[in-house]
Amino acid sequence: MTNSREVDEIRSLVRELREALGPCDPSLNSLSTVVGLAMNAEEDVALDDLCHVIECFRIPLTGEQFDRINRLAEHFDSDIPGHTRIERFVR
Image (cartoon, rainbow, N blue to C red; front, side, top):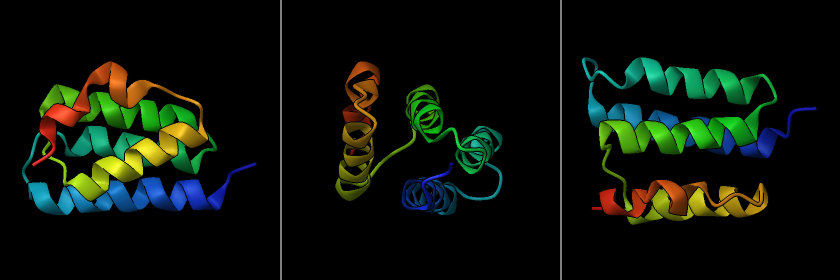
């Protein structure tokens, strides 16, 4: 069963990142995949993918976005933000 709070949070994060990146950014397809995973009850996998997309495309994050990602990671008992070291992209 999908936990709508986590799905909503992931969708919100992706929407914010997409808006900041613009319509022609090469990471947009990858970010869309993250939302698809979340919508299909794979929220933990979606979070993992989100962190890898941020790392791969060096997507800038706000401190607040990074905190939200960390809260989701705690909820899923995941160390993916630390593993991918996405804190490097906080601006």
